[in-house]
Image 1 (spheres, helix red, strand yellow):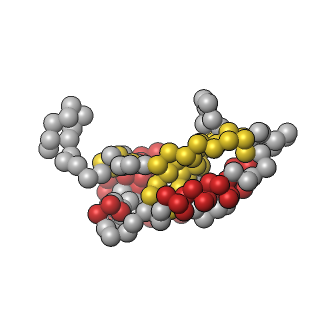
Image 2 (cartoon, rainbow, N blue to C red; image 1 turned 60 degrees about the vertical axis):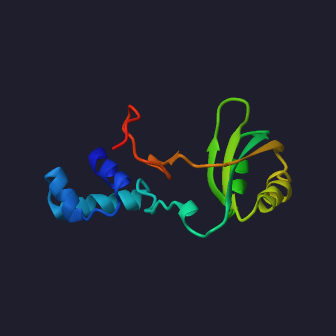
Length: 158
């Protein structure tokens, strides 16, 4: 039921009782569906989006483009598995275009990110090249607008 998944994606804090009212379903049915989606791996987890720039936590975010040589009979998956197992890696995507993988990480400093790229990513056997881009400001992520006055689709303030 994609309606249930959309509701949870927008606000995972909603109780099964509230969702049941929204969808005109029984609470028990909603709980069963959620449990089933969790068992099947459709629902992978629940998280809170935090604007870390409004805290005293210092960090830098970076996107690293990687060009790699795909492996025979395994394509990009084997290299991707090596990369996503690093705890520094927050997201990893196979891309079309001029590079193959996009790696998103956070570090305490630019030096820490540079060390990760030079000592961990660049040393993987099938990595041909890397290109690191530091995030200077986050405006919108996961459909959440950061640090600005909310506006509608025409740019008008609420």
